[in-house]
Length: 295
Image (cartoon, rainbow, N blue to C red):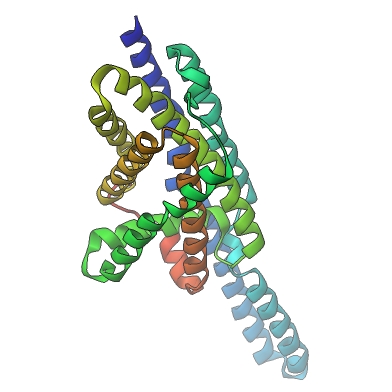
């Protein structure tokens, strides 16, 4: 009966998480099409304006002034054509469902404390330890960034991440909105995913197959559900192994939750900053980019 319940839990886990993951890594193409339509509209207006100027030289100064005002408005709204607040709210809300899903799965299989585990303790010590344990992930990310130009697979990982962040936060640098969104998304994703994959799945598998196999199986599933590109899936699997090892070492799910959430927070903010430095043409190309995992 327990094995059957665990299988059912896995099905629920896969179904619950795949929807939110897809929402994050597959930004809506209509946003890019809207951006292109806006640019074409501005181009047409520019052409008409130049035509009118050629035939109405006596109104040249007025047309020039209007054109300058139009250009200023275009510059102010340049990157906002990529931003849709509904996408942001939908993603944060969807990720929040992972928390409810993990509680339901934990109740189904009888995991202690609804997936938080018997040793859960959100203390300042746990928070500090969790933050410090993001350093190895940050160092790895920095090293991969140094050699990115040599490997197309790494470029695809970066583009996939930037494309998602472009759909999530737009192309204009918005420090306050980015911080609030990244903090909310990092918290709900860190809590929801760690409850599901470490608090429930790894915990239940450990009781039946041992800790090593439990970390391996839960991490492979985690990686498959983050298969934006093949290398992205591998990196996600390795990150999951790291989170699982932290859970075994600390016996406190709060530690990997903080590590996961803080890393996501920093990664999202950094990706948003890099996207905001791209030109409008580069952002347009990025929004239409299709990676190895796209259909």
